[in-house]
Image 1 (cartoon, chains in turn purple, red):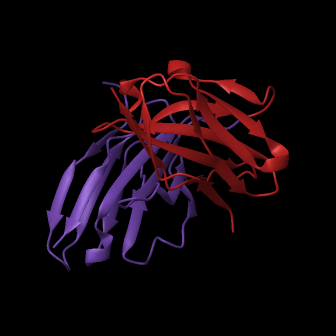
Image 2 (image 1 turned 90 degrees about the vertical axis):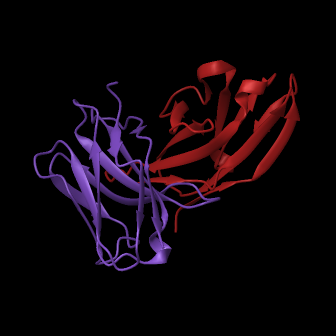
Length: 115
Length: 114
């Protein structure tokens, strides 16, 4: 499968713990996005990388959230001191810049439950 | 602030009925428009997209959408739905300002009765 892959698929954690998610984009894609989706809502933009540079961050991304893409390939999203409100599906997507915008390809997501 | 509104949260249709899902966005500049579909247990998949040119775009599985700039709308249509179209449909807008943030609507859950 050469699509976007995310790991883990599910994560249950206790409030206050730190969690880290991984996203492996489609190999030739230089753009990578993180979204969060809660029940009954569409995906909400969190942050975006072009290669290894983090170019945009949403105000939704509090200080407890940090994302990296150290070599311009895979990315990690870390949430420190998790809160129950962090429970959501975290989606990763990637796309290839070609001068014009192209569609993003989404992974299956990581479902986080904070208890 | 930019936003995307989907008119119906839930739609129930019988097979062979026609479908139209409404989508409106609020942004005065150049946009790129998408419809994504999420089948039960699967990831988001692109249904169709509009960047420029003919405002009537055709996507996969017989879906089409029409961009009406004056109405800030990008409604999704299918003349005859099938049971396999049961899914959640998301309208999305990417603002063409050099940034690449895509804003999604809240989604419409479609259930097609066999």
